[in-house]
Image: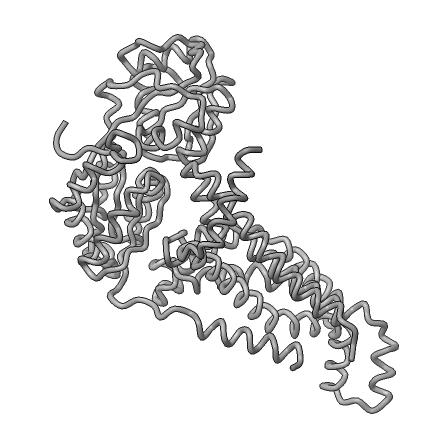
Length: 231
Length: 270
């Protein structure tokens, strides 16, 4: 118990003093996970909508694959992304391993199926009759899509939160493809593992609290967008 | 602003903030967790970076994995502590120019009550045999690290097949393994540096030390450019040379004295 108290004190101290290393780590975590989530939205929302609305052979299999992808273990993603990015791997020439970009790629692979799967569910739960009605009112296909996505706004924002929450909290992939390099690819989760390994449990607790705090703030902002009344 | 516009704006600003990367091509150093967890690299790497203009990407993994990364040409220089294993890799030809950097020693730690009665023994293999015979719990790293390699050679010297309900493997780093051993009241083999760093937090005592078999030697190995054309050989060599420079050796010798009252690593023969 004393240890947790020490950790809280340490966290407050690190925050108040604006410890540059801790702030750098926090900023990197936030930036990497936000970009990864953002790119997953750009891919996942159109893809999820497409799968939700289209009818094609093997659709059931595709939906199952997406749903399985929602539970991809980060270490598995980390391992495969590492192998691809190795100097001897197919993408080795890009020299991306052990850079923040590598973490973004791995986190994208983790978040994209989550966003796709939740978008798919969100769009699919809109009654088909609603779609027909919109089309009957003379809407173009683009207008129809826009209305559907607006209708699915609440679950879509839930998809954003799930995607972001999935990547900011993962440690396995960030550790493997980022390498936990000080000042370059050290993020909050990998720093927590390192400090625990060093026996600096108070610093580890402080970093954990910071991670919880920023996750809360991001979700709070998203929830605010989600729950505000329509104008 | 629409939500889509907001997201796009946030993304663009985040991407714009991405750091400009790589001036001189970075050196990838594959090393063992003990050099990082002890904090030694935190003082040596920045000095090397300022002096040489290279940036270093330090990947702290077990010695086995570090050697494999070098062997495959995924790292440029390797700093490890498993002499027998290093020689095996050296024979394959992908790693070259092995040089001795520093040493310290391993210690056998265990619960203060010492149920196996190893305290006072001088020979590490004898002590381990006793642990096995008494069926006292022994926690192994089990991760092909330098410490694990040393432990396996000691079991071999003791003529004991380390198997059975008394022998458990953590598969984790030294710090985590010490914590688990402390919780379980188990014996384990630890490098002195990590044990010193953890001493205050765990209930494990040094029960045996000073056996020459417990010497823990760190070597630096470069990766052959002839075998792996894309390796940053110049950077790897610069780092290896730096580790053996008078300035780095002086820093290694004095590292930790202030915090722990004794040095964590030694240089020179011995």
